[in-house]
Image 1 (spheres, rainbow, N blue to C red):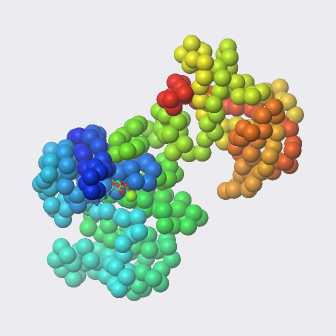
Image 2: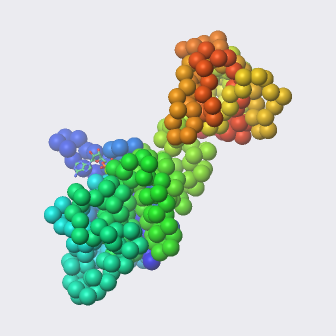
Image 3: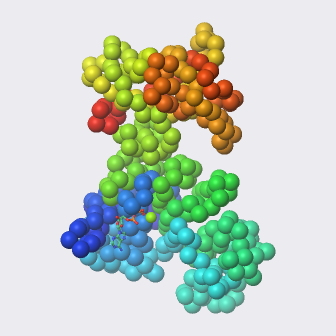
Length: 366
Ligand SMILES: Nc1ncnc2c1ncn2[C@@H]1O[C@H](COP(=O)(O)OP(=O)(O)O)[C@@H](O)[C@H]1O
Ligand SMILES: [Mg+2]
């Protein structure tokens, strides 16, 4: 397939007197056959970035190479989009409403002036793989969301592209379908060793598909690394919140603890490295509530007593809102296997190796 190298890639848009820095001096490499994921909030340059890779936008500055071939340069698309062997799946799937599934999938092959016989063979093969054979004669509006999404994917894959670009491809799917859709994309990406870039605001999309992930904020990469590192060692509080549910709490540093009302959370580093104040980050699934004080749970530490405010059921677990007993204005969320009555007092246990400490300005200390 192909490796993608991006150097100082920059795209500014002018809006009246304002300059919008959609993509701002981004440099990185996606190795051949690797799935690279970009996580970022809405409006932070993800779609623009993919459009630059596809050749649909002209860079304001910077270079894009496919292997050693220069494909984009400052103010210049060197290799036209149709010659890049890139397929893109758009957020809204962009199916042609007045064409059947068959014609939607066949469209890129017709544009490439392939023979009718070859087109038919390829369309049927990809339809079989993506379980669309029985709906080939249907129109997009007659399809379920999952079938529409798979049609968009089939249309992207039918030309055997070298690069697959996915722009929030699961956002329009019902939550129940997303996991299987992600698994399908991951399987196809691995089997074909397709160099892939997926962008999304949803960390589950990135973590389920990407081998390497980057976080884009204001058009710049704020962190690049293994998806699991971004989740467990987010470089800032903003990235911590972007990459999953997290409790971020302002704490006073007293001796070796971060103190939040009556809760004492042991610091993973010396207090000298932290200063007087810090922000503690703990994800809901890194804590447990116990009604009786236990002798200890392996890897967990008792940080103090809390009071349950409310628990609600969601995706197989209960999300329990709790407060330190001495300050009900502070709220944390913890997951629990069982519902717990509001008003119940319990001991909060935190997984010791998952406690994240940030400086007041939001940068990760440990
Ligand atoms: N064609 C355009 N003209 C002007 N501004 C644009 C254009 N495309 C995108 N932008 C702006 O660039 C920024 C990044 O947009 P986009 O890449 O779509 O972000 P994302 O995909 O992360 O939501 C936004 O502020 C958006 O309004
Ligand atoms: Mg977008």
